[in-house]
Amino acid sequence: MSLPGEETIKSMAEVLEQNPDELLAMCGKVSSDLIEIILQDPVETAAMLRRLSFSSKKRKKQTIPVENQETLEFFPLESISLETHTAIIGPSNSGKSILIRHLIHTYFKNADIKVYDSDARPNDWKDLTVKGRKADYEETALEMAKDLKELQHRTELYGDGFDPGNEIVRVVEEWPTTAASLSEIILKDVPKDIGTTWLKSMLRRGRKYRMKAFCVAQEFEVNAWKIGGEGGLRNAFTVLYLGKSARTALRKVSDKDLKAQLKKHFDSVQYPCLADVQGQFYPVLIPDLSGASSKKKKKS
Image 1: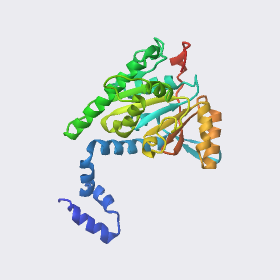
Image 2: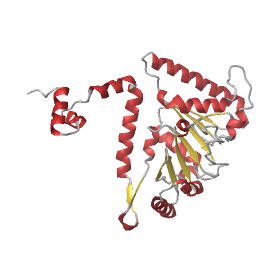
Image 3: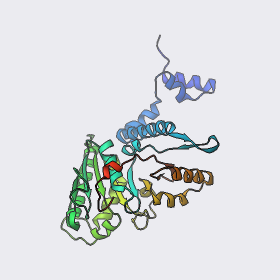
Image 4: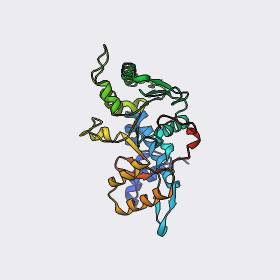
């Protein structure tokens, strides 16, 4: 016996006063208008649906009881690979770079990875490719210009119906200080103010074409980052506040009960971390990464 068609199911839903999408799903079908929406942008839509599903399932699992049987909803680090771009904020020696190495080696194993770090020592990033060492901002500028060309290339591939390619991950240390130094660089075939141009381009279009940015800084201030007044760019970041920065960022939480819960949680853990996902705040369970930093380093 064959199942009824889409229009028949929708008519049944109307008569029964039920949600038509729910009845269609029970019959293993999807509304044709949703299929049209997916086909308009299959890569981005599929990524968004997977991200929402993954984050929802993980967050439900990562809840812990606190006083009076209340629970905190936790942001899963696993979803970093599905989120947009990531800003890691914290004071010196708060573990920013160590956390990024952990995230990259855990969730971006097959990606093309480069780190832009003007102050990197030989072993700071271990096996990762580092550009711009010894304050060589010209090298960083040239590499960022290559990223912009790759972004354009992927845009053209996508427009012609082809897969944009494998994941690209770029890490920039000490933003916006790095951006300020890059603004003074003048090179042939390199856009003016390459740092800001690079960041805005990545935030606007990067994730659609599988290009992700990790920006590391001691503070996250949209005007200093030159993305003030552009809400879409600000919301392209998932911000992870570490250590003292996590406690300071609690001022951004308007819900007094949630703020109190978060403070109690931070008092109970060794590595406080607060995630800001488009204005929604979640605590993050940071693994003990002390083994990764057993050797004394210039910065973390």
